[in-house]
Length: 198
Image 1 (cartoon, helix red, strand yellow):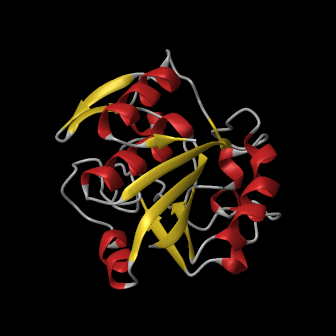
Image 2 (cartoon, rainbow, N blue to C red):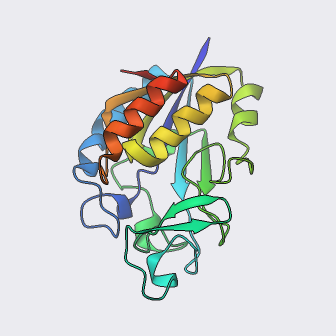
C-alpha cells in the first residue's frame, strides 16, 4: 500500500513570532523533514486567506479573538488575522524541505468559509480535491504531521478516515493550540473516527 505524508500548515504565522503562533511549532520542522524520505509522496497544505476572511476577528466589529460565532456552516472560532495571501507569514517555514513536496494544497481562500481540513472546507461539503489526487496515485495509507494538532491536523485526519483512507497522526511531529482543552478533545474525536495516534 502506497504511503503519503500530509504536512499540515507549516507556515511562519503558525510558528513562534507569527500572527497565530503555536508554542513549539518550529521544533517539528526537522523531524518532519526527516520523515519525508519514508513516504511515496509528500503533500503540503497551506492556509491561504484573503484579508477580508470571515474567520478573522478583525472583520467582526467588537468581537474578540478566539471567541466563537455561528456561521452558516456552524460554529466558527474567530482567529487573529493570519496567513494572508502574499504575506511573509503565509509562507512555509524556511527550514521546511518544501521542494520535496509532490503537491501543495491551498485552503481557506474563499472569503466566507474557513477550511481546517486538507480535504474539505468547514461546511464538510466543499472538497479541496486532495482525496481524488491521492486515490489517483494509489495512496491509501496517510500519515499526518504539522500544525495545529487540535484543529487542522485533527480535522484532516478525521476526514481521511471517513473517506476510507488509513489515517495516522504522528503526534511527536505536531504541536497543539490547546484552546480550552481542545487537544484532548481532538485526540478523543480522532480515536472515535478510527485515526491511529502514533
